[in-house]
Image 1: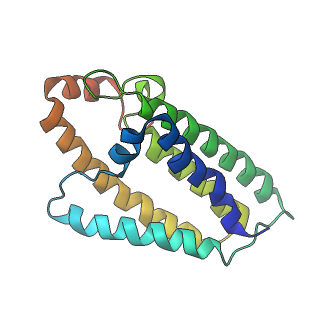
Image 2 (image 1 turned 60 degrees about the horizontal axis):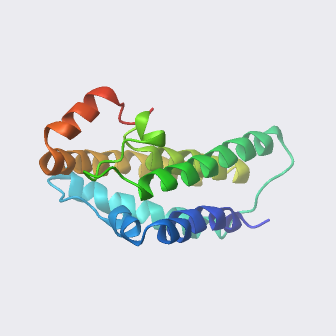
Image 3 (image 1 turned 90 degrees about the horizontal axis):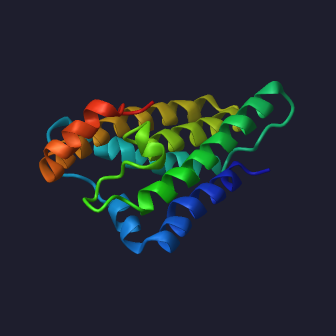
Length: 172
């Protein structure tokens, strides 16, 4: 099986389901907070690694002949389920615009966590070291994007968001 097929459920959830649930949610998910300093560089690493991850999967096959397949399948399935749950939660923010329900009670960034878990499953299913390196670049650069989003949320939502930050972890 071609590795790119692993992205179909992810893309359908990330764009299709979110769009069906809330057209504004798709716009909000595509929004990047204003970037400063090294965040601008991280943004480009984030975008390029994202594209490379997707393109490189076209050239990879899912390997079913080892225990990595079962580990990868379990991690990938968990990532897809978390992605679906986080999209449902993201589509329905509180009145003030802050997402605090569902997975957002446990992580301020469940979509990013879900992406990482899903993509890690892809890495294990294809057993590609290069794909793993691309994933690490993606995840490290995503951290800088998240920092810019948090700064924007503090500016936008003030003390309410600071209180949320004190109660809920950034990742898990």
